[in-house]
Image 1: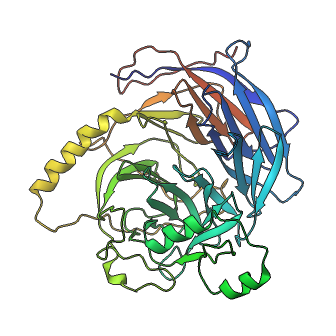
Image 2: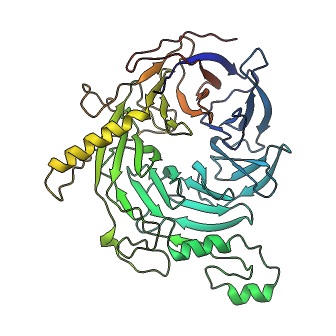
Image 3: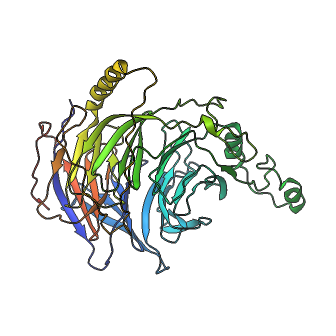
Length: 456
């Protein structure tokens, strides 16, 4: 049985940097489970845990963007498979993705093309050079860092109609989930032949032959090295605006299920989309791209809620929950500086309960939450109007474990786990970084843990 007990070990507020932090990410390619990055304002902080030092971690690299308009919202790690060098991607308000080689301490690449700020970036789980970005311009873009080519754009007729806030890639690498300010959650397939072919072609270097370039410019992709035209994907295989009633600012895969959070709801929902996740060009599940067939009536929209994980003190947007690398713990921060933890090993119980409930329902009947419009908020640091979701604990909810500190009172924007779950890092609006270490004691489910600051 998994035990959870974390103690606050170290806090850091950088006195020379007056900023807020929006994004944090551990380097999951790091075998020591010790390196993470935090971003906010014009600043990128890279730190390493060191058990031999009197403090929990030390800052090893810092970057400050030259553009005074930059405000970094997100970061994510990858690796150059050609030489093993760690790569850190960062992006935010200017819509430019910067690629930092931390081994040399320099920005080595920049990706431009989005027409608005970038809210989240994610690397493909199986191809370290493939990077997805979600933007205020209503689109998701797929880039190849090896050749600096734009591979695909997920937007258009049935794409998001407002800024895209969150994305996640299925562990198989075959499906992309997205969510945004339009209250929508969408699933896109990456398995159609044209997308697969374009991804493969994007690894070819650009040709220096102008004659070849002109002769091939009408092709969407080429095998002789000419610049490819990106695939434009207009139609997801699944979409719903009925699950949430406000900005959907975080979506994550949990196996073939999805977890998502709606701004001002203080609830993380585990749910099953009514769509067959088949890694092939299935004619019954149509994804329409430029030059492809249109069959919008086959787009799936139904879903079933399995359980809801409730927490308190959250009526803002742009707050990201985190899932441990082994998918055993879920964590989220809130406005009161608390961290809520759930043991995901209990989820099979809820899935079994879900199956039993489905067997008692009438065939073909789908339950969907009615959409209730709420007034939208302004920027990320502004509160949304409307009361928090409330109600007594029901059969399909799970009480969390709570990490409390009398010192942290700022909004925790995002949390992340080290690979071995030994560390949780939380980043805050006041420019502070909080680290919690697993001390290995047993904790009873449902009991609050009021941890006092034990800063070393």
